[in-house]
Image (cartoon, rainbow, N blue to C red; front, side, top):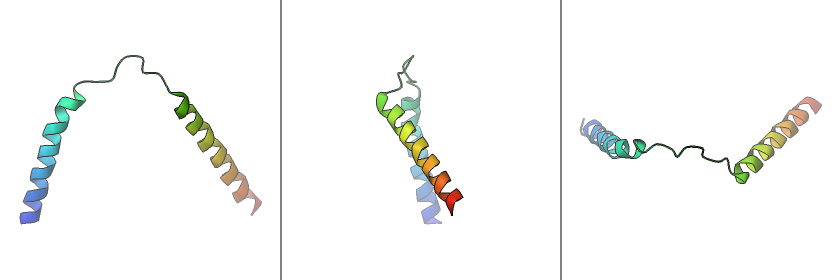
Length: 57
């Protein structure tokens, strides 16, 4: 029972601290970075490779 109360208090504190942070919002027109494009391309290439490997065996 004590553990449940501690977890509940912890969750409430985290939510109270997080509320003002979420109220700020994102800046308009956030650019998609070049690094994100590279990660998406690498993920797509890895997915295609895994798909081809699974079809070969």
